[in-house]
Length: 165
Image 1 (cartoon, rainbow, N blue to C red):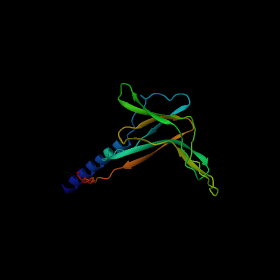
Image 2: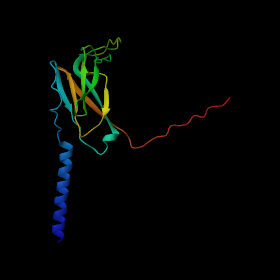
Image 3: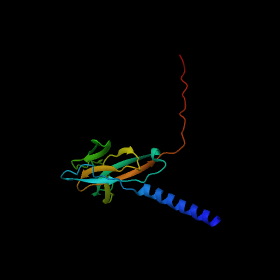
Image 4: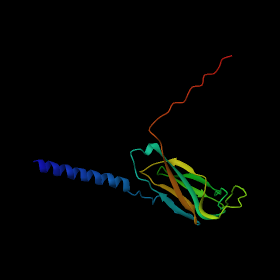
């Protein structure tokens, strides 16, 4: 009796862990999304589902590796736009750029050139482990992202006592 119960519990745990794994690795069908226009490519960000999706944000960048002077801050000019996939209620992002890379203009006589990822301004969006983020970016560029996690703790603001006249 004890071995049957233990075997049943092990089988149940195994099935539960398989279901949990399947949920975190399940790919969502992106065929309803439009095909990339000429000169653009479609990329997808998929993050695993977690119990704390609501406490996370994603910051997305578009850019490419370039030789820089190793001193000045350089960024890719461009803009993200959000569009709705009609009839589905899903959104997708498009990043457009003219390829210009403005920079600070500091004199750095001892700086050595280096190869670095020159990126756009970040685009913040909600973390959703159940739905991929579909992006359209220009050919020759890549998308990268950061995940931000909020602490569970809440902090109180301090009230400032004003002097009455």
